[in-house]
Amino acid sequence: MRTRYIQRGAEVSEFSQIPIWRRANKKDLIQIGFGLFVVFFVLSSYITAVLHLLPYDPLKINLKEMMQSPDYRHILGTDFMGRDILSRIIVGSQAYFMPGLLSIIIALFFGIMAGLVSGYNGGMTDSIISYILDLIDSIPKMVIILLAIAFFRPGIYFIMLIVGITNIPTVASLIKSKVIFLKKRNFIEAGKALGLKTRDIIFKHILWYNCKAIVIIQATLGMAEVILIETSLSYLGFGVQEPEPSWGNMVAAGKDYFFMGDFFLSTAPAAAILISILGFYLLGDGLNNLLEWRRKR
Amino acid sequence: MFSALKKEKRIIPAVDDISFYLKEKETLGLVGESGCGKTTVGKLILRLIAPTDGKIVFNGVDLLNLRKSELRKVRSQMQMIFQDLDAALNPRMKVRDILKEAISVYEELDYYGMNKRISELLNQVNLKKSKLSNYPDELSGGEKRRVGIARVIAVKPKFIIADEPTSALDVSIQAQVINLLRDLQEELGLSYLFISHDLRLVELISNKVAVMYMGRIVEMGLSGRIAHKPMHPYTNVLWSSLTEGGEKTISVSRLSWQAFDFERPVTGCRFHPRCEVFKARGNPKECADPQNEPKLTETGTSHYVACHFPIL
Image (tube, each protein chain N blue to C red):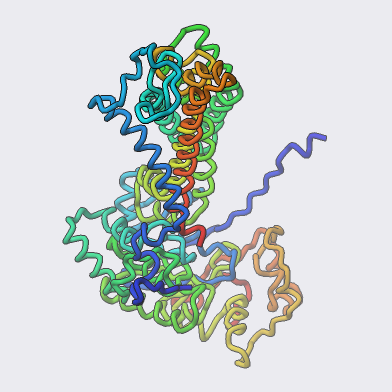
């Protein structure tokens, strides 16, 4: 079953010896590129904010230039207080990014640990961990978040902490099923016979070599979900508060003017939401295909 | 109604009352049909499966009394070649990483030392250097087996359990692998426990042969004697099934060999329901007597048989 691949007109090597970016599917690369564009957009928003490269101050009210349509000075127009929408969108991406990372890191770290431990050990440990995770999973996410908001009036970081905790069961169950599947495979036993430490078997053979794809997909899906939760909370008025820009509260603020013909006030941030969620989904999908190319062959 | 909820437990020992020894640089062949517990014996020795009772002595140390950290040290001297070609090979690791990992379990080497050791291993198993950057599923069966062997000798063992190392390989490659194992034995002073169902192969490579039937050793002795003068009816059947057209002391009636239920409890000698000698002698009582299961007894020069009526 060994196929030789032709590279630049000459027979060079087998598939695995071609660098990953060259053997990758074009479609995957486009997806990853699009995803990375979104990520870089967010990262660059921090740089532009720090270096004062923003076209306008996103918080500066300028009542002389209220409700302007897009033109060369305000590329996406201005809102009802004359603030530049492009600047607000750029800064608004910061509303979800760092809190989102926090939530993802919590969900992944605890999810991976719980999944590995319960999958590898099984028995009583597994029962206890599964019970706790089922308990978390059984409460609707939005209910927990709204309850927390009602009781503590927390900041966005605290909310994202809760989102992260509610995401632990999903990650844990995925990792656990993978571990149980892998545990039956012979190379784990062979590793034991070789004298590998259990730590090496779990973290190297199971997690690093075989669960990378799950982790990446969960990270990107988690980010997309975080954007949705953050924007919907901000839209409802629970998340980031005015005058701080967030895509959610920008859409909310613009919705009253939408039917009056001032289109860009909500559409621009809504489009940003759409594009970034799509970007994170595609990034995860593309990376997964790239890393899992062996399975598809 | 509750009887369905109660689990009825019946323990079938996979391996029972087995005892053998192996000297340095010697090869012991373990033969038997599939499911008779050959692999279990191998895994028990390595303590991949915990035995319920017994002793496993290696270099004068009983492995069952060892703690985990001590066991790890001993395991560096005992290794196992698994039957499944892909068993030892994590499908996501390149050959280089597989070998590197095996080497670094017990040795710490710098970059150049590692490369040197890897190419030394490749030399020992006759593998091309270009295979290092391949994934296991890009290798042929023989190459996979070689990588598996290289991975095992990377930890510098003294004793290797070779669990059907030639199954799933075609005949020419079987010969290569056998020759490779022999060369390695000479070069590195290895002892083998060679597990196989192929009696001819075992005779070729082993000094001693033990024949297993349903979790017990029924015959053990020097390989030449087992092959040419089998005493146990089971060995006789095994051997005569291979040598087509040769002289057969016992003719195998097809009926008794089809769909045999190994889980059915057998009293007395385990082999008697399928034994031709038993039938030929008119179903003697000793064979089915539960109190009188035949024990391995020395019959002739270091030739052990567990049978009431060995073929002499």
